[in-house]
Length: 59
Length: 288
Image (cartoon, rainbow over all chains, first blue to last red; front, side, top):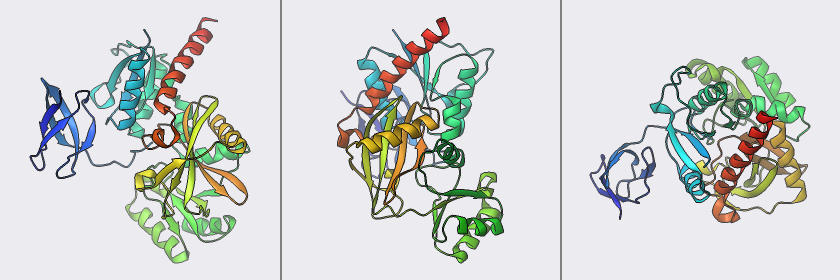
């Protein structure tokens, strides 16, 4: 069973795998905005735009 | 059951792979979002055996390592290793001290001194990098004096404190690729070529990866470089030059999503195995 949410940018319906985690990032399949999972409840995810890359980000 | 704390901020593909490998090995994973906790040594309750630092933010990761090490928790990578690897100048110094071949480098705070350093580096072009930086961000290939003056002025007027330190490196002709070697503890487990038409060969900037066979020479130099910075869970960026291999940088929160496929090696599994081994060895040390 997939987990569903709505892209906050283009309002596309987004289906994610069941093992999705809070704080996970991915691209919206429709508008390609980088999104982050804010919360998960009962197979519904709340999504928000991922934070912009900061100067100390990396590996 | 071993309890592993995964210290994270944004969760990337790599963290998912590590979680998946941990679960397969019967390791309990405690996800700790560093943005959601207070690093309070009095109130923080440690309910795990070892922390694996995987924060995409270097600053948050470093404070978290310091915090948990001070509470007596084993952390990978250690603060010593993270402190060296996050800073390109400190990394270069360690490599040089250990006799590991590395591109010529210099650090200057002043334009006149930077111009002098160019001579030492063999003349233009030279590369300027932020000492603390990643993903090929803000790298500059300086082809002449005009460009050096312009970059220096921009950094001087617009940059934060760390941009006042001008880390410079000789330009090495990479012929369209460099090597990323993965070193887990004492073992060089695999390597990939990072291929790009651009002189910047970070996968974050679009470089493609292909498997790189581990030659004896590559294993030796990668192993030496990893130990030079303290050893642990490391990914090394290596140039293949006419004079042999030169170690460019060492990464301590490695990204590997594009490398498991081409190499056929589960880097995430090797990371979890090393965590378990490290914990066992650490317990032994603590008990002896």
